[in-house]
Image 1: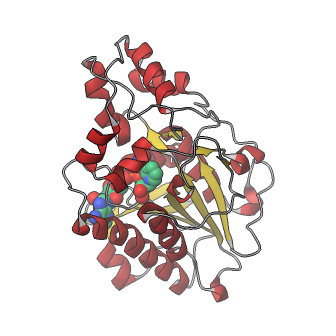
Image 2 (image 1 turned 90 degrees about the horizontal axis):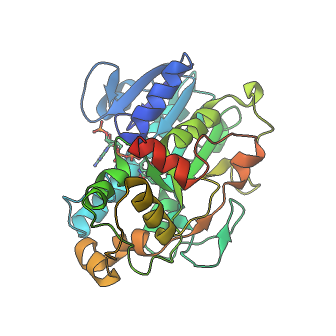
Amino acid sequence: MRVLIGGGSGFVGRELSRLLRVKGHEVTVISRQPGPGKITWGELESQGLPPCEGAVNLAGENLMNPLRWWNESFKKDLFSSRIDTTKSMARAIAASSSPPHSWVLVSGVACYKPSLTDVYTEDSEWTPFDILSKLVKEWEASALLPENVTNDIKQVVIRSGVVLGRDGGAMKQMLPPFWLGLGGTLGSGSQPFPWIHVSDLAGIIAHALEPNDQESLGPEPLATPSSPQQVFNGVAPALNTNLEFTKELGRILNRPTIFPMPGFVVNAAMGSERASVLLEGQNVVPKRIQETGFEYKYPDLNLALKEIIGS
Ligand code: NDP
């Protein structure tokens, strides 16, 4: 299969490209920069969708970009880098005379309201309550294809938790202080920490890209009657708190984790709207992907962190 990946040059995209190539698929990346194996967003707009059987959008300004202050300009970039790219791909798919059989968007679990006690599945009702949940709402809506072209195209949204892996994402920023023995919980530490290993997220995306009739796994969950999008929570099955993550990482690195980072410091450094991702969290269950029989390589923190740290 030929797969077109918006934002495929990034942390998740590199892992997905690797996995797809191992499976014998061809990958073309859409990027802001031209290069081998890439087309630009401008070329997508002007020349239309290149031939492909699967399409994924992973493009987006990094929410945790340490070089960007939390201000109006950054918030605008967070929205436009996700929504404009998703709309471009959806438009190109809708206009194509031979559209792909699958169209996948990776969004986030920030749509679910943080809670110490609630447990969310894909069936949980939610309405936007803050800027990040509003972002998810608009982002997922921008992926919807017009009704006249939806019949033969599988539309999937994967709501990802914090993606853990060696080559980027949250671990890249978290590991240095932990290596120095300066790691600790963020805020109280009791907040849920929804996470997934990058290799498992790539596996879920690859599964979502398979045409409905060729899946080796179990039956596909039906989209809700109100939406043609099939939703999967892209998280590990283990439910962990920030404290459990901190202690497990310290244990594996053999470092103390006795320096909690008070909530007000995280809020001041990152802006409270962005810091909510770290200081609050959601218990999210990947009910639908588990129902398909998908097998996680890293279902628990110990396995995931050992692979990432390399011991
Ligand atoms: P990256 O931060 O690695 O970014 C992916 C790609 O997005 C980049 O390689 C870049 O491609 C493109 N990009 C970055 N900034 C912009 C911009 N301002 N305008 C247009 N394109 C831009 O993302 P990840 O791989 O970590 O994540 C993939 C997707 O999953 C993202 O949409 C992210 O929001 C979502 N997600 C990620 C989580 C995580 O923990 N990593 C958690 C939940 C959701 P190029 O430079 O080639 O144009």
